[in-house]
Image 1 (tube, one colour):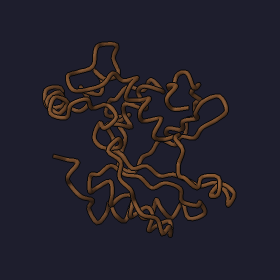
Image 2 (spheres, helix red, strand yellow):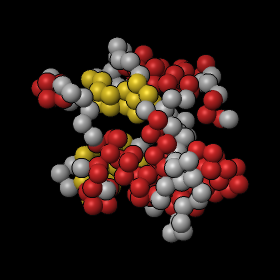
Image 3 (cartoon, helix red, strand yellow):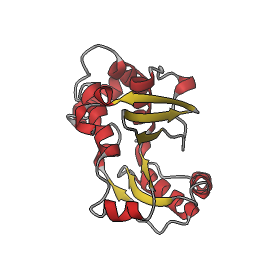
Image 4 (cartoon, rainbow, N blue to C red):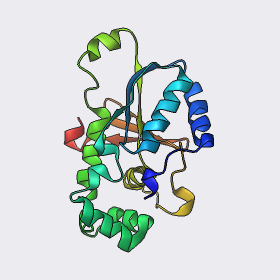
Length: 196
């Protein structure tokens, strides 16, 4: 399966270059999908940034982690409808495909991961200045988030590329999302109460 394919040398170099942009930031959480390519992307970003941070894994970042109810049924849905077809269906008003949670449920779980308390010593860390969390996930999750919040269709032109990211931070009214240079503020009630 594609998620089991590791990074190429060029992919490692590109992730390290991305990391160099982050050298002035203090590292917060460095989380990745358990897929080897995501773990190694996180490690390369950290190397490029000069961060001495370990990459932790979280299953909610894997494949469609927050959206899966039952892995075998979900993979069968992907096989039957293709990746983009499954994402289009996930973003439609129809009931979710077998093995998948409704979009709102998965999005709330993902946003909870993003804005949840970051570490037991959070107050201590914040006293030293703000940190930057880096979460490495899969294009399919980004496509659902972008489609859900920004109403951008998951077609070829809008499909997330390697190392393309969605920048998210909490605001007083909700969360701010930045995708391809466009920022939008999403109110808390649209993000989901579990993410507060």
